[in-house]
Structures are given as structure tokens and as C-alpha cells.
Image 1 (cartoon, rainbow over the protein chains, first blue to last red):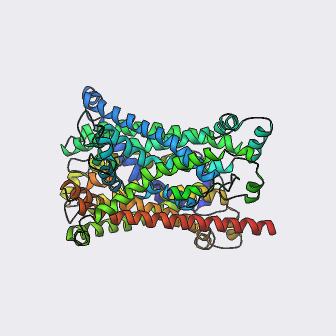
Image 2 (spheres, rainbow over the protein chains, first blue to last red):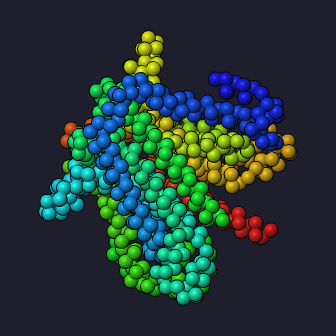
Image 3 (cartoon, helix red, strand yellow):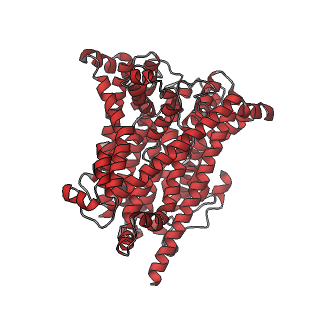
Length: 293
Length: 309
């Protein structure tokens, strides 16, 4: 409360004399807007997140270590990170092709295609989950063709990967698209007139310029996939050690009222989210430096 | 799909997205690909899209109507479904405005003022995007659950947060927390503060400046953020599933209701309710595209007027 009342009551002119970290401005409302947002964010996001970490250290250290490193937890990490990585990789390749086609070529229905790319952002994950399961189940539209060859997709790690590919699909497209559209045509023309083949221009001129945005898109898709729950639980079959992702393991612990265990696993996931977020920020910084140059 | 690719051949210029049409025409084929490469890339992209996006969307509607219109109508008018729809709308109606107010306040402070540690603040605001929905639900459980930090106090005072509407709203707020700031901060930073400074210098008070200068210039981006925020709020599953308790007709949101029906092998009914959310997603995409188009046009007009002066 003190944040709000102290900054709220004092006119911003005086506030700035007290707080040298904010630069003087004629615009009003810094105290109110900053104070309110800090209070709101702390109450709803930061204090609860801190409670998670505190709670997981409620366990003795050896038990804590066992919860986050026992066989079942390790198996869930392997699936979560492995499937997320493959999904992000698929999105890196096909997302790049999609972005390329949308920026460089003209074809009928392009605007609709461009809009549809964002479907995974707009479609609730539970809906995506049951739809993908229906498609890839052994008797589903796609699953039946694989079943002919004895390949199971739904209820295996492949199904998990497909769900994670779906939800990460827009990231690479949407990070690469604007960078590709802003590339100066002159650079490519120069490369071509200096005798570079189209492939050489692509690998030596275009790809290096697009690399930061490609990596950012990959990291975003990966980060989104790691935490994903809704689209995966339907298609995975949820077998411990085999098709159980880490968020589901947390859910299972909660249902068994093992709050400390759930908190410990949650903290591990939070740690990875935070590392990934920092990495993405660094990548974006690098990307801006490259393109803003 | 094949029809959309077939009449592509006559256009050789690799045209840029929306800008610089003239440059596109002037471009030589040296900076574009052979026809067969273009053709194959478009085919690959469309096939990927069809497989991963279009088919899931199509199957939702086919499965929803698989047992006929009667089952469909019965599924979406069932009292439990109606209660789930109501709760979903209620949660979004509370969570979205809360995040709009926060988004406006935070964007104003971040975009229009210089202070130390700004980059860290921006990163922290984005944190809920990176946190797993299940973890988002978990943190409120640890605070307000029966065994949680405030669990006993809440129980003594007969306040229910978990397995009740407040918990669902909290989880929804957390999940959609950064949506508005994401859209507003970059735009407001780009717009600068000259206009607001002029308004203040000419004697406007803070609220006049906000409602007459700031708000009109960010309205499309704000609406864009609201639409995305709302879609996510209504569709959230993981976080809400932790805190809801899944009591039929009481604390079930639409996505949770879908899960229950699906797990009871009532597939047609599950897909019927899912089709409503799929429709919401389609409406969201249409509105989003319309707003992008509108914003691009206004930007174009602004550039043209600036050039004319």
C-alpha cells in the first residue's frame, strides 16, 4: 500500500526531487501510473511467484533434490524439453518458408493465409488438444494412414510434439516476417550484380541478416511449448515415465495434495522460463542492433 | 489448395509486403527465384498450414455436427454448458478491464518517462507469458488454497477464493497480464511525447490530455490488445483448471466443460462446445486483421499528409 499512497499523494514535481532515478518531465501522472502498476503487478504476479519459491524451500534440501531429480521427474523433463525442441525446430524451418512466401511471393488468398497463421494464438488450447487428438488417433483422419504402417501418433511422444508444434507455429513467422519485409532490396541487387548466384545471395546475404529474428522466433516457440498444458494433455495419454510432461506432473502432485512437491517442480519450470526470457531479450537486443544498425 | 497455386506464374516480381510497390515492379529476376522453386515453396507452406491449422479447425466443426443438429443444440443449451458459458464471459469481463487499466498505467509510465531499470521492468511484465499456465494456477493455490499461506485466515473469515470465481479471475488476470502493454509500449514510445507536452503547455489538465490526446492516438492498438487479451482469457485452460475445482454448473468454464465432456466420451457434445470457442477464435482473427488493415491505412495517410506538408 505504501507505494501507492506515498507516490499518489505527492505531486510529481516534488516526487522527482526526492527520486533522482526518474528524469524530469512536464508530463503528469508518473507517480500515479507507476505506483498503481507496481502495486497491481506486485500483488497479482510478483508476490505470488515469490511465494512459490519460498514454498518449495519449505522442503528439506535432500527431499527437494529428490522431488526435482527423481526418475519420473527426469523423464518428464526429457519429454517436455525434447518435444518442445523438435516442435520449435519444425516451426523454425516451416515458419521461415511461410514467412518467406508471405513476404516475397504473390498468390491468391494470401491475406487469408496471413490471418490464419495466428490461429494458434486465438484458438483455446483445449480445443486444439481435442481436435489434434481426433485427427491423429489411430482411427482419425490422419492417424489411420500411419496406423497402416503400425505407427502410433496420438498417445505417444510424437503426438506431444505435434501439439507443441501447433501452439508455437506463429512465433517464427511473426518474428521473421517484418525483418524480411524491411530488408533493403539494394543489398540483394548488389550481390546479384557482383555475380553471386541466388543461393549464394541467400546463404551469405539474406540468412545472416535474418538469423537473429529466426533465433528469436525459435526461442519464443520453445519457451511457449515448455509450459504448454492444454493442447498436450488430450493427445499425450499421460503415462508416467513415457508421455507425461512436467506441467502434468505438477498437476498430479496437486491432486495428491503434495503442495511442496508441486511447488518444487514449479520452481524448476519458473527458473527455466526466466532463463529463456532473458535469452530472448538478449536475442531481440542483438536483432535490433543488427537491423537498426 | 492447388487452385491457389496454379495461377501464380505470370507474376515474376518478388514484391515486398505492403510497402514500395514501385520498387517491386522495377526489380529484376536476378533477385527472385526460379518459377519451380517459388511454386514448391508455396506448396510446402500451404501444405504445412493445411495440415497443422486448417484440418484441426475443420474437424472441430465436423465432429460437432457428427451426431446431427439435435445433439449439437442439446449440448450447447444444456444447463451445465450454459453455466460454463456464463462463467467464462464473467471471468473475461472482470479480467480484461483490470488488465486494460494496468496496461494503460504501465505503458504511460514506461513509454513517456525516463527512469533507471526500465528494461528490467519491461522484462518482468512479460514474465507471465513465459510462465507455464499450470505454474500460474499453482501460485494462487499456494497462497489461497486450504493449505496455503492465507488458507486458514480465509477459511476463518469464510472467504472462498480457490475453487470459486475469484480464483478463476485471478488465474485469468495472470495469464493475460502482459497483453495490453505489449501492444501499447512500442507504439507509445514511437509516438513520443511532443503532443502531450503541447497539450499540457496549452493548459490542459492530466485527464484532458489523456482522453483527448493520448487515447485517440492509441485506440486501435488498445483495441487490438483487448481482442487478443479477451481471446486468451476466454480460452485459458491450464491455469483455470488448477484453481477451479471443476464443479459442474458452478466453477466450470467452457474449456473445462469441454474436458469433462471429452473424458466422459461425449465427443459430439465436447466438440459442440468447442465449436463455440473455435468461432470466437475465428471472429478474433477477422477483427485482428481488420484492425491491422485500419492501422496500416491510417499510418499511410499520416505519412502522405506529412509528405504533402
